[in-house]
Length: 328
Image (cartoon, rainbow, N blue to C red; front, side):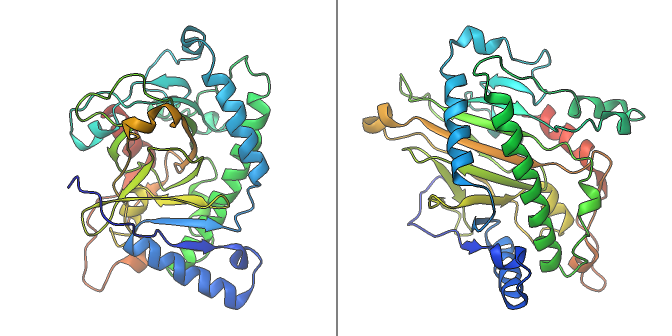
């Protein structure tokens, strides 16, 4: 289970022909994405419309924040440690799999929806924590405008990806869009500092886990100690995107929507080799698309063969997420 396999490439797909409405190109993109979702649950995409200059600016801006004194960063920690806003550290992602491991070796800063969807869910008290206002740091002053622009870009891209997914599942292209018009997507910047001491046994930068929501968009810089995916051979394989690529992976909700025909794949972030640890500062920026709190996650009709029953009962997206967060 912990073996690292020979390099297996996560497929790279240019989605620009789909976005440009090129008929032949659209068909090719949909087929390639469908294959990747069925076989791996991960794909690298180019032609996505997120400017690399914006990503570089976001990484630099976030690094300014994470370089602040730890006591200053703690000022932006939410009162409820489980709320995905502001500064956090020492979480245990592997706990969601029932594993008792040391804390993950990373810091994070979360933002959530930029629009005020809260009033829509006043009748569901449990939904409140997913729609609370964002926490913004005072330093650097550019943090809010830069991350706001990037969040909006990821929002747009996530809708484009859902259109591709719908086409691949042979349902109307707009099938998922009404389920995300009041989403509670989060966008954390992940900071993996160079380790100062060797990790404890079983301690990783981010423990093995699957993502909780519908899909994840991930931008990363390159440094020793990075993302690994558990492939069908039950070995860990490195994910090495090119500069123009974003990493896309499916979450547990998409697995439920597709009756597990599409894979919500186990992944982790490993430690750098100790001999290069001092040069291993690593950053990623993720966008976790979580549907509307009251969106029902139930089997897509095209994912059921005649006479086949769904593997999972319907559940509201927010209830699924609440359970996951309480157990991490």
